[in-house]
Image (cartoon, rainbow, N blue to C red):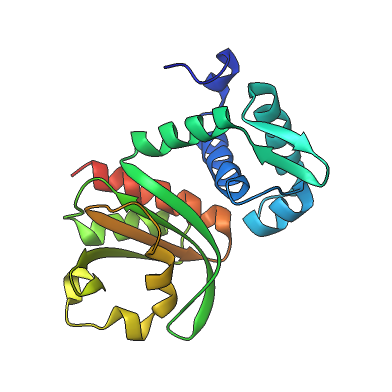
Length: 196
């Protein structure tokens, strides 16, 4: 299924990651480029160029006060995520964990993460400050390497962030200084999870 013009080929590498981050943000509502730039942690000129490219592709439409994602943009975003084994994802403008506040991104994965440390390390190399690989049981969310740790007590914001995502075999929560760094870390971690 084609979801854009031939220019879609230009949305690869870092530009594709930027587009995914911006479209995830626009999935939450209309945003102007200054607001998007500040929230994502990208320069305003980068966001302006992304808006122009995504508008030309039909993935966003300009509105008074900002831009919004189109149905075509939602399909492209879902396809990009699905290619990485991500069932659903969302941005976290502010999540509290272990007494500190972070920007973040959370996702549910279609595969079970077996190489927890390798996936966490991929997220950090991708730009995140930290990453949690989380699983769910009848008791709630837990960290697979320390199942006895009470995640709800230690990081209730993390557990709340996972609510509302599609049910997955594993979940990723990537925390950092900017939403863009978190998305980059999330996509890197998801790719590592897909690799085994």
